[in-house]
Length: 222
Image 1 (cartoon, helix red, strand yellow):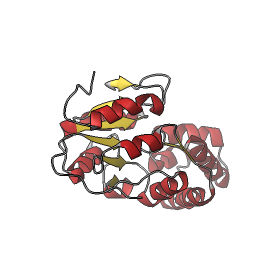
Image 2 (cartoon, one colour):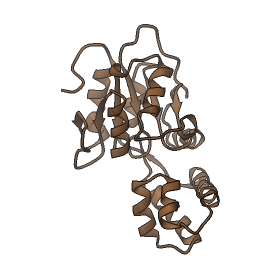
Image 3 (cartoon, rainbow, N blue to C red):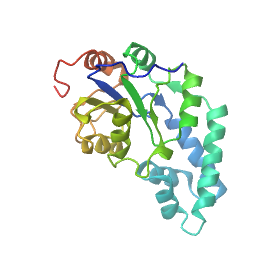
Image 4 (cartoon, rainbow, N blue to C red):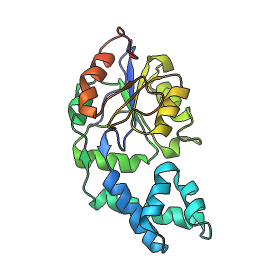
């Protein structure tokens, strides 16, 4: 299902990260990177720890500097695409209620992954798909640059100060903050540095996100 374009006069918008925020993909990511590491004779746990902190090309430079990074990336993409087709995915508790409860045209996805994978995962988990998805191919600078979130706001016709970013990772939080947006963190026992509010789970955040999106009033950072 695809949501409709933004309605005239909307004043509040919500921009979501995907992996770790709406979709629980940690075990999938670990499995993909583990298989990739085996192909290159590398320690899977060590590779995954680097991959958690860096983008793929930076990961390859650290753990497989003697390999062609383009071949490394092609192998990773092959494994990720296969995982979308055959892996087991789950949406975080509250994700479906939240996305179905948001006003149409009031939200977007901002992901470091690729749109076709996001659509595949949303199809597998039954989540609705918005009209705006900003993926890795849509921007030259990924998170923690503000560019991805600024592009999403522009495509929604929203000002940065009217946007609420929902994130789980430090790079995404920095991206939203540097874009001049309100940023809330979810799905972590400890708050990511800089967030305006933190919730241990997405489910906890659902009523607050819906309240933010329902109208122009209220203090998002409270």
